[in-house]
Image (cartoon, rainbow, N blue to C red; front, side, top):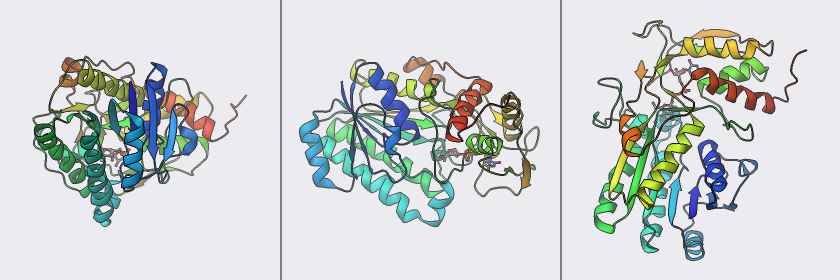
Length: 334
Ligand code: UFG
């Protein structure tokens, strides 16, 4: 197939580009490189451009004859979305609408959308299934939920078929060691711990130990980037070959929660093999962090025939550590 990957130079997009290219699809990446990196596009063709550029989009779609579009290009920092909601509604909503409209004009019917656990807001129960009420508590989550809603209407009115995938905590790195996570600024737990271990930062701060969880730290559902990408590939099959119609949504996680302390314990074990250690500091709670976020992903497993290959946290962290060592120019201690 001919697939357009918007945001293919970012963390998740770049892994997706690799996976689809390796199974023989032709991939075109559209990325404005504001948060993505040219070097992360190792496969397919890269068009540097923005969803605001309507004439570029028109040209791209005229030339592309795309069978499907995957959309990873979004701003995704919860804190920033609270202080600068305009940026989030402009990019995550208005720019996505530009993309959907050009798809409709060019009769491209298959769309995979990166949504988020942040559309649920404060959990009313865990694990969170697709029936859980969606009441986002920040503009980031709200911006993604608006697109989920728009996709329902576009399915009905224009026959645009879509699958929205609600990620819990995407992490890990390409098992081949070719790609991995590169955010600037980095805000995510696992890469921050590993940067502290490699010496690229001094320490990691635990944001609160007074949550109502077993050890007092927040619990999250960490899903390997490879498994996340497999779910997208299965979703694409369901749309294109399985004839999945309308606008569907699936939660993506492993269904297992790990606390910040458990993540630290596993990471310390992994990096100790290279004689590294992590300096841990104690901090206040970070605003907007729910105590527990764990997915019920059984719907994706049943309907998309998706099975995670790397559900084990230690493997996830080992892959992320290999990548971090590469970034840090790490020489194994002898
Ligand atoms: N944490 C720390 N110290 C840090 C960084 C994180 O203790 O330096 C903690 C957080 O408080 C949280 C956990 O580690 O409890 C995981 O934090 P991340 O920032 O790695 O991930 P989040 O769970 O906050 O965010 C993820 C996605 C967001 C999405 C959100 C949904 O990355 O895009 O889930 O709530 F919005």
